Length: 248
Image (cartoon, rainbow, N blue to C red):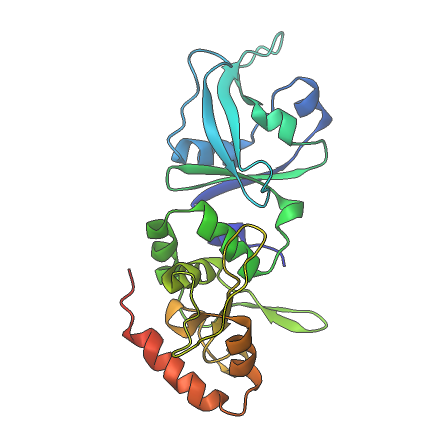
């Protein structure tokens, strides 16, 4: 799935990492990335390249946070003003040829290698549920309205909003949202319960990609919601239950 970064970040920029970025041990963010850095409230360090800030990563469980620097550096012989650079942790994390996305969500700054982010919205949403505070997730989930965009190829899939997925997972509190479910959830590698976010009225039937039409279900209830003989009755019960829950 190709991610629409504008749906995720307040401000963002995309740049392919060059050999020069690595060779001089300083990544040079482009204008859009600098705008995202500024929007996150990070200012160039007057103390040079030794003052660090936290740069969160996405889709890299081994390196969840980078200690990076952001500072101006004069380009010898260029006759131009200082060049903004990022150093330390980010240099050991990126490689030449990486497509690097830098974006902010409020005052939090993120770095993403685009090649690692080609995941379904459900996986992206789970990443958000681990990385972002609940207030931010629910605020963005409430912005989702109406039918999702589609892409035409051999088949047509829906560009689901990952914030809706993340908010449904948080709302569930780690339990299946199907009324009277008694199934035992198994755990993922990260220790979180395995839940799948289901559209109560399917998107293929004109359902909206919104928090009120989404429910975090255990695998058994999810399959039954799609294929069970009583799925219409289950759908009605699930709609009523989700409608009764106050949205944070």
